Picture (cartoon, rainbow, N blue to C red):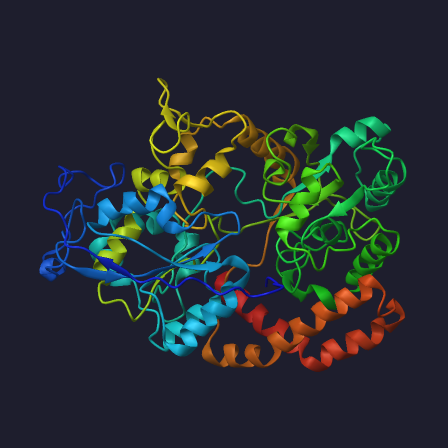
Length: 546
């Protein structure tokens, strides 16, 4: 449900896999689960003469493939990354990509399906919605993966067997799996949304960490009025972010009692509600309006992109923000000035709560799929299966050994069996990977991460999330599949309803529409069909929860 501000034209690149080199590098006899290879498939699966059933390279003869993936603004192009060449070797050819600006993903994805100009593989975090999977699976544009997994993907198969909730979540109502998700294992990963407070400013002003919405307001007020950066200018921005990608509103929304916007669960975890139609949402709007009206919320919050926001944070202008990690926004030289804190409470909600993924995944659900345009699904599923091995997942996510790509950067294995990623001073592990190693949007199984000895900035991130957010976590509404009848009804309501509530939220907050119009707003929400929508998702939740 991400809102974007402008769409950028993607670079569409097809890939032609060259004739594979001979030999399998001695991997044919390895089990796959730990070594990265795949055990021998059944006799029926060996009829494909284009691929090697085990070992690497995968391809035995000329194959054509294309992979669609997101490309964040600070991400190097695929052909500039080490991982593209590494996968060339595994596949036996040359890999390139269909790269799409992450803000343009939904538009370009929908266009690809509408025109039939599909890639062979879709592989990117948050690639498809449940309705995408239902619609395009039933139309035959996404192929079922069940048999391919059974024959060619032992590591994916084992992952689904070991994670029954994951299997349930990716299995459509017709019993077929059209899209996969990569499970994540580190404790911190289920946390949805990460927020950061400028502790250097807090200490300078002698402020206590807020525990309630009112205390949070007072902190932001002090940031605005008391020159905490000490430059003698009124240039502090108490709270900032980019509403499309790094929204700060969750800290307020959870304080009034709701884990997420739109379809969600009430405090019992059993009843489905629509957040923007609840009485407490009016309190949320009133608080956000107060922040905006008093200059405590960045006036460009609703229009700026993430790059603009981070530029402000790096200039020591921002007191509170949301971002994937504190060091991502402010850099390695300043991240220690920032920390998270436990969620807030309010008169509407005395309980601290924070949203957690119900099924923890790297990159979200429905992030890996094979389309009907793919003439080589067997080779494709073998490639994807490699990402579910310890060797493959580690390579795709973190890259090669020390000094392979950048001097002083890379993976080091310690005598105790742990590993860590080294980077030269001043270069974060994220920047190293995004600029030189890999596309960070590629979901892979990350069981290998459990052996990671984290670098200081990652250790700080983990500590903040595990201590301040995880203890208060509650699972969000699950990924569910709808029947065709249910989906048709949802399609008639959901888009119009979302458009309306999003527009009205912005108007209420910036003051274009007074909150005295709340009753009229609720009447319109009901007229559009919110009650029918909630009933459908209640039925789907009850079905999922059996």
